[in-house]
Image 1 (spheres, rainbow, N blue to C red):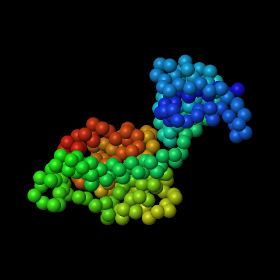
Image 2: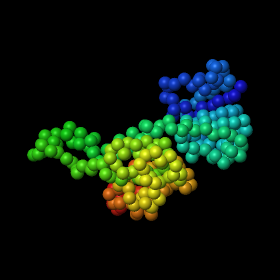
Image 3: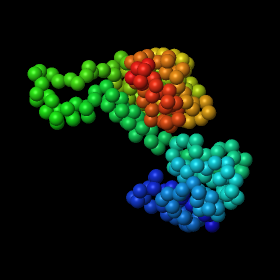
Length: 261
């Protein structure tokens, strides 16, 4: 039988799902044994996965050093979309299949993008706290604003990485009346009125820039001192992709210097 080892199951299943479904074929026959760990420290990954033919991971680092110590491994199943924590070259060299989950979070991430964006523009939470503090009742005017409102309609939303999530974000942005531009390594599947532009145009034209590219050598630190200098001082930056798309030191300095908001 196959031996499946789940190394960080809590990231996917805090207790409401049945892992045993992984051990059965479509006819309900068991074909694998399952060993489940909610969390696995880096020092125990090889030890726990030594006999596995399949490992299921979320954020575990499957480096070349780890992979080469797992001689029985046939497959790495990652319970996420990004695969940057897996050495794909080492896996391929060893004949190991890598499978990720495509599109499972597109709606949720797109919704989060606009939760963050509306938090910046409408500041509902800040206003609610102020009203609860009786600031409005003490105010001399009926109209009470802590800061000027910024409408999304007619603003330009730039999308860096126009995959499944980027397309969902574009759909919502268009419903808000926004103009949408995007940069992607592939310019196909343009069902929506989205203008594909160069990286420089994306940075220069975006009122709001939303990051959705996978993390790779080509996208790491895409947001840095140079790219930030090309953006409008009033630009808003939303990152619901990998944190390493941004050079955090450069961004902190840009915010301090008010290069962008």
